[in-house]
Length: 171
Image (cartoon, rainbow, N blue to C red; front, side, top):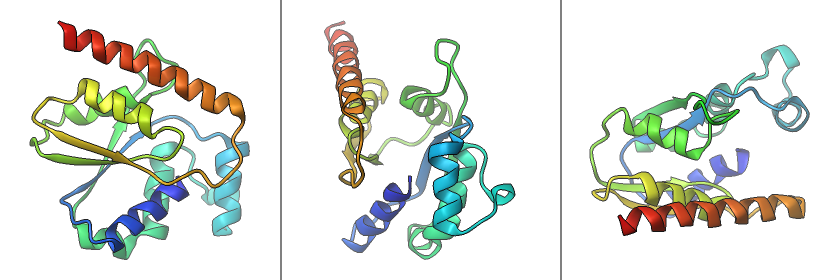
């Protein structure tokens, strides 16, 4: 998540101007070992001050890392996805559906993700967004070690999602 925040700032410095910044997040609990400990270390905070959920973490990171940058963009919005009945935790589609339920005005959408998830999340957005939206998905390269299984899992998700998208287009 920290890399995504830094990427938003880089995008802004490149001159990309946009309307509201909308964070699509979930209500899942953070993984203490991987996420909470990193936040406590990076920001030198005690465990009791550490965010407990993904949505709290994003708001925390925005306040700590991007107050000036996002001020240039203006409006900030947080859409918190709840878990769908078929998933144990909210996924990209759940977050997108939650945002679409707010009846956003059609327009251009810059989706910021991170590798290796950019292609998968782009596929989800292209599959489920109304055609009136123009979608561009970008994200920073991964800078840390990831197990090979993460890449294979993501590739599997991309292929699965592309199959859904192609079947939707044939109907």
